Length: 131
Image 1: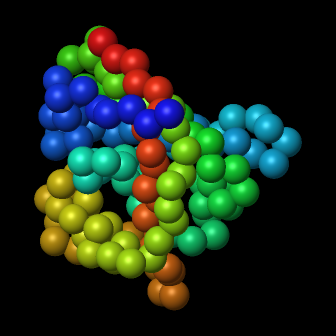
Image 2 (image 1 turned 180 degrees about the vertical axis):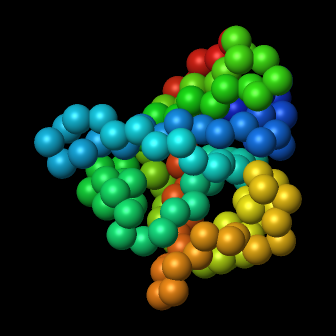
């Protein structure tokens, strides 16, 4: 069942708030990675390079959890559990540049490797908790 991100937490997606993304390894064990995140009004967006562990995990098993801590108040957080609704390369290069501007103040993502293909995972929230 889809859930909406409560308005009182939307500001977290405007701040330089890192999310901890939890995916599942092939053996079912959790794998956690700090990531930049975004919200398009319906989906939480996570951008990564094709072939990374989180990419492999999410292609195999789309269940995901994210926790986002407010950088201005470590006791305020949002947890989102859900599933990948879409994996796309469309707009992924522009999106990673947008995230680099938000998180680093740079116009272009500076860590791109030659031949790297960027992908966006659109995560549909199914369970929301926060404080």
